[in-house]
Image (spheres, rainbow over the protein chains, first blue to last red):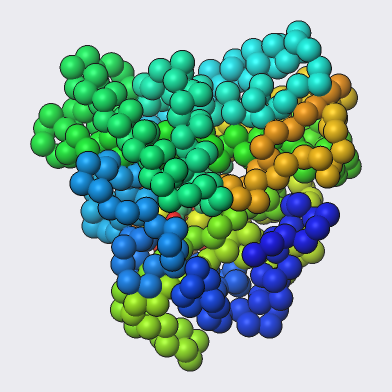
Length: 392
Length: 64
Ligand code: HEM
Ligand code: SF4
């Protein structure tokens, strides 16, 4: 579905139409039919139901020919596409480093990374591409440190991850990209098995030694964390900045405050307003579900476009307005149910540091090109901008 | 007000800690929810209800 011309921050108008006229309805996608769930309440009720599955190989899973073939030597992409109890077993192996207190302890380090990058921006030439010079390096540096992945390899994993997620890339290209990252982490896991350090991947290597996890699955979890850990947050930094530049009154409020409450409120509102995981959550139905008088049958697919749920007027007043002072905390930009984002405390902290620092340190920050010259990631697995030339 | 948590359902999202840090904590080994007090004071009622509403695993029940 396409966004309206000139409205790069708003969900496709077709989704709004469905939400108003047919909030739970079957649609044709990828040459199959699937239930499209567009209301906030319905999404929350259904996506957490144990009768829905995240396994792309289950009948009805709505992805059509976009599904990559199974390969024996493939590491997979971790527990994001698995169901409980296996999903819960693996997720719990890596939850500790993402808990609130551990993430808070990383805040000074992240502040340092952000400060250093802004120093470099200010000392360098302008205009500059904010994506390459700022938005991508921050989460990449942070996730590399946390996992124990050498940052020198960032070009490699950023490129392959972007291809793997891109809807306009062919199945062959995406399968190759998946193999590249999987192979890379499988090899790195070998290193962690021999020379364990104090990092997350070494923790997984311990589990491999203890026989709790195969080396392949450990590498798959590494793939998931490396991709999810940099791609999403980077897009929130760049697209969030652009959204603020287009809403100068909101930007001014954020720039003129050092109140952590308002900064954190701005992060929640931008997460809600932009909902960058624009392809929607996808699920297959495992057993019939009776839902408000309709039967959702086993073997049918479900699509949950979280972006339109986060613009549901029943839940958020004047939903299309960007208002950093509103209470947006009940948004579902991180999904809902047992797969809700594991990295959300980290993402929130990184975004609070970035939004709370960048505009104060560079108060005259502005676009260096016209809005319609900026390439939006309409074909991205995660929405954002491919580049964002800025000056000050 | 009485709060009940289900550690088996919890997926360690940390949302409850962010909403009401005087009531909820996370286990050091795996981030699973720990209840700090079963009967929080009324002054925390709004925060506790917020925690229950944002819990993605529906692992928090509040009885008024
Ligand atoms: C603003 C940034 C982010 C957004 C918008 C975001 C969004 C999401 C969403 C919507 C899901 C749910 C997928 C589903 O239900 O199928 C998810 C899952 C996940 N995210 Fe994030 N994410 C972000 C940052 C991060 C970071 C920094 C990490 C750190 C490693 C991360 C790791 C994960 C993992 C591991 C899962 C899978 C959880 C599971 O299946 O149990 N994410 N994310
Ligand atoms: S909000 Fe729910 S899932 Fe998240 S840590 Fe608390 S109890 Fe667990």
